[in-house]
Structures are given as structure tokens and as C-alpha cells.
Image 1: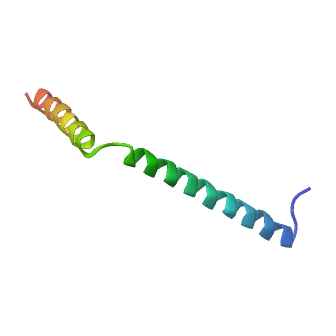
Image 2: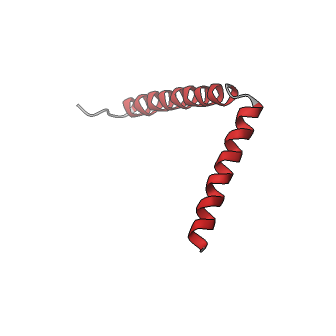
Length: 62
């Protein structure tokens, strides 16, 4: 049976609560991952990424 009347508000409210909780969980997990890196590790990864992009750009421009 499909929800009627006030039941729709309950369904929408429950879906909203679930959505907010899921977003909070994902944000916390992402923050933990970000904080797990040391500044030197982040710097090294950025340098590697920059070097890789530069080599691709130089290879495709010639």
C-alpha cells in the first residue's frame, strides 16, 4: 500500500534523517583519511602528480 496523507511526511522525514546521517558518515570518513597523511606525504604526492601532468602535457604538445 502506498503511504497517504501524513504518512508521506513521515516517509520524507525518515528519508531526510537517513540522508543526513549518511552524509555525516561520509564526511567523517573523508576527514579521517585526509588527516592520516603527514604534510610531507601530501607534498610528495602533489609533486608526483604535477610531474606526471607536466610530462603528459609536454608529450602531447610536440
